[in-house]
Length: 109
Image (tube, rainbow, N blue to C red):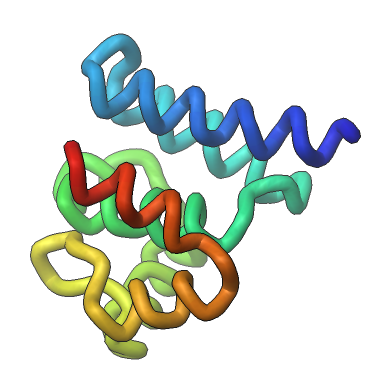
């Protein structure tokens, strides 16, 4: 049950960031904390990485090299673009894993 609560917190954080209720750094640091506790799902991880890439310059001021390297691997793997958008390949992976409804919400915003 606690994993579901933490996973839900990840969505709340992302929503708060998108609606500008929390700053980027707070969203990232809290999301990474949830991720490190193994409580972010695949969709949340890709969305976080997309936000990191969109705000790469700011992210580089506080993220360590490991997180930046993982971001580069995600781009090189064709899952997010240089502009920080989820690719069709990424969306297909997420749909295959059952995250289609979340992608519909993402596209509405």
